[in-house]
Length: 128
Image (cartoon, rainbow, N blue to C red):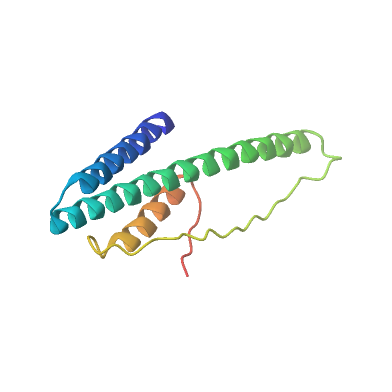
């Protein structure tokens, strides 16, 4: 999955560069503005993919920590003299979303997508 995302990120940056090049070579101000807006949208999409990739890395690291914890808990239950470890984990994620003139629902879509990814990984999500 991460390799596919990295390819998508690279493709978005390539498309953004193409749009920038077209903006620089056109004489029509309206067309130039359209190409610059297109560049901006490609870069926004790339950042969205980067966030998703970072979230996947985050959940993989937490899955690994959980596995270690479960092993320790299993070892502790096998030896009744040892106290079972307990862990309460709380974290917050600040999500920066730029409001897009092209899609005014983009911020909410990004939040919903992030919530879905976290819930799929077994996290309880409370958005405030």
